[in-house]
Length: 284
Image: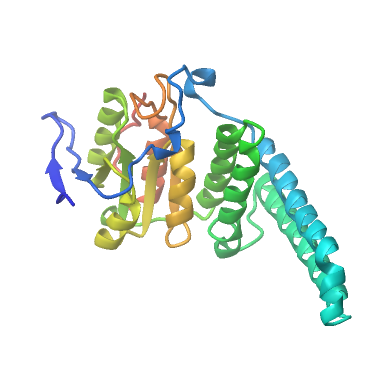
């Protein structure tokens, strides 16, 4: 395993950011191994309305409930020979579980659309929602809508997380980026990070978040990735500490010259750090 090394951006009048490369075991971008080299739909921009996620989440809950009901229907008689009340008990448990799933989805939607988080973060964006995102992604793959549904899911997650109004010190925030950013995007990230005096970590391989978090012990993270890698990162990290996830546009396909919304990144960094400079915002 290669040791971390530090590189600095070219000299400029603006503060310079600390850029640290991390190389570990799992390659970033492995989710795109099946890519056929053709241009991505929409120029690699998978923006989608939040309602798309909620529709597929409802389908996911219905599918899971239906599959469990079918299984219980098939094995229920055999279970009844072992203990006659058992099938009835299992049907009751399944019914209760289905009610709880629909109730949770309803509270999630109400939290998002009402502008007020109705549950604590451990029961919302840093809790069961992370699993719901991943199961919904699996269902969306079957309809060829994976990236759009994941983008909508991440937008919902970010909205809920932003409302917590969390603030941390400059040394308590990490900015995590992949190696596939375009030069313009990378320069913009470094400029923002230098201005707010937060370190930037770039990984050439996966598992970067766990390693950096273990070594740096941040209190919050702003992460950049495509929708597929972001879903994996949120599942691995967001349950342990607060994360805001900025997705990328992929005009030249995955893992090459990716673009990001630098204005959004600066807004997040500025809101998170306890002391913000008086200078203006960066424009992409």
